[in-house]
Image 1 (cartoon, rainbow, N blue to C red):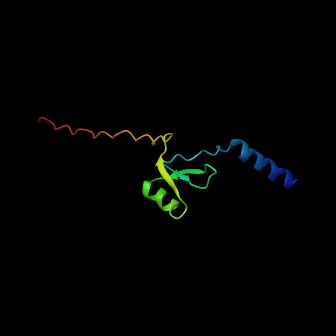
Image 2 (cartoon, one colour; image 1 turned 180 degrees about the horizontal axis):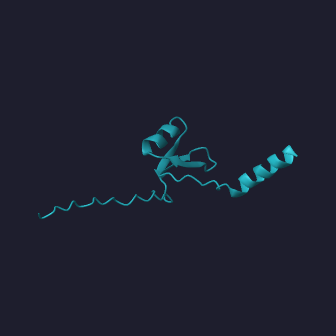
Image 3 (tube, rainbow, N blue to C red; image 1 turned 90 degrees about the vertical axis):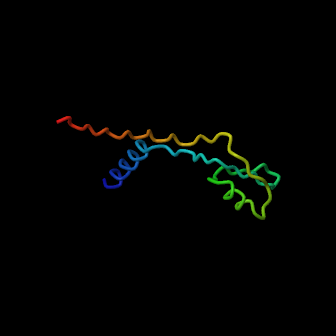
Length: 84
């Protein structure tokens, strides 16, 4: 009975969980290994170059990168002065 309960909980957790989302980063490394391998998981050009160090290849901007939307600016409430 406990196994059935645990299995039911596990299935419910999988069914209601959010799906995995791909990461989107602004820099891609293209490796010079002859197989066309690339990795678009870098937040900076320098990070990409460091990964390629000793391996060969080049870095370029990810043309599918969409930066996260900026949070809307908060407006300050204006203080009203009484005229008395």
